[in-house]
Length: 256
Image (tube, rainbow, N blue to C red; front, side, top):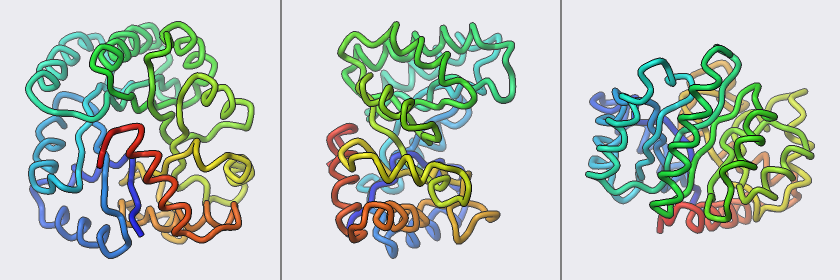
């Protein structure tokens, strides 16, 4: 079995013994490929350091997280753009719109999103999109920037069936993570109705830990529990889910 974690901040452990410990637990649970979304200029070295430590398993993405879009966001983007020009990356991310913490930066987040989706289309690589309390705003932006060239994943999807269909119609796959294992979240019903061709798996580690470890720090090795939940919802074995979602990840991000 080969699982792919399409969104993990495992690199926060870079420079500590914990990185090797977590990677070994990944391998023990069949997690062989990990995509690392950047968040700001400070995390760039962590991302590429982790890739250098595990070049056959870890793959870099570069982007500015919407929660890090502040008044100086253009300076941040310039640093990230330079890193992109000097390194091989597999996606632009994580980018998006977050109105949970700060609604006052919406216009800045929107412009940062336009700039970064432009990078993705120019480079011919996918995006990893963060959306929190902002589906309407995000879809309005996607309608604007989608010209047939934008591909990628709506990361940590927690929306309803209508929002899932809209994202898929816009050319995106859906990243399903630990929330699908939460009781009363409602994502299990949505995920059960999704074609496996439209989803990839992710942990968003160290956040959103799946059951049975909810309440503890998340890690990429727990992707196995998310895969098993999807398998249960679809009435198939976990190997089928692993094969389908890894194939999707390989197709979207070019990680082979």
